[in-house]
Length: 50
Image (cartoon, rainbow, N blue to C red; front, side, top):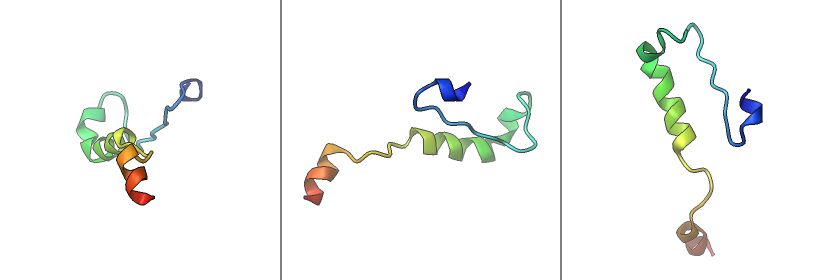
């Protein structure tokens, strides 16, 4: 399904179900942070690099 959504990412959490997902913040939080962190340079970063 994620292949049909542009920009999506698939996260596999070993030993985790939909029911115990909230108990696995140690796995979920870093994945969400990485997904939400922009990977393209900002305009100010581009202008300072030139």
